[in-house]
Image (cartoon, rainbow, N blue to C red):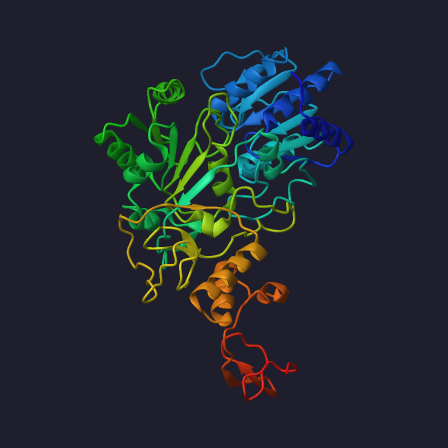
Length: 484
């Protein structure tokens, strides 16, 4: 197996910092398990023993298969499975390992290490305290957003999501989102929305889930992320009612049934799979194309993990698509946003600012905007935020990362076209990005004021006569200051 450049770089850094309890942080779909498998292959060639620990049954078998592809034999520590304790590599389920004698190891590899703060994981790490420790994750924080510096000493992050999309390793998803649900009053538990209250608010969705899936993703392999078991079953049933092959999974689904459903999704017999907190991480199906986000979350980690399920490049795959009915992109930003990894700081909060939709053409536009930048529609009044979560006829609209200077230039152009004041343009920018358009006077120079209207304004201790339209300084006759 030929490794990519960033995978080789990751192995080099892991070797150089082997004593520092490293986290290997790579985006979902970039091959963390491939790197771990090569690390293990090299280690056993030098006589080491390795313990690779995961938190789900499916991941045990996935790791065993990746190792076998490199001609590395491994034992399995998993309930109801035969073991081979003599192999130098052992792949274990944390739940099973906690109840058994610990095998000898020089290297401990912890998959999805954001979970390693739970007592079972801490006890394991303490048991192998003298070993080389390597954590694998796409999101190096607890789900609550708290950092992992109490367990790990260094983050190795050789490549970004944006770079992997540009190289074709991952597919950048298109994102469509409706106006966000009103979650005011929903309490927080463990850093995220309380599931009981959230489920009550999300009994129905903003935007018709079936209609929008048919419009944007009809027939494409889809995973839906939901609030609770009842919510997941309901979504699966609604797809089935309109003739779409669908299924539901949760933590109580029997293993044989779960394996069968996942196989049906892989071979196309199931088109839409709805799940509750079971397939958000550590599960691979490269041909998956669509993610329905029906679970609002405050967790950036969960947000990125869920979207990562559909981003793997795959032959014959048309693309990746997110239907965000939960407002998570306005809460956390795009999956390709640049983020700074830290073992000491909480998960970064990134967002491109508030957006709304034009009621005429459904284009994305700044919250509070009066004039649609696409079709020129003029709102008669502000549209109030809905007080109840109801399924509506509103359209999902595509979100994208924008250049702030280009965006402001477009706003200025619209102000010129429709005769809006410069103050209107500044407010539209602030509503869009959460800050005023500072250091953009060169862009504002394109604003055309057809006739100056002198007015007196207070600027702290200074009173100035300015134009009410363009806010440039003028004299009492409306002539620009210093211009005759």
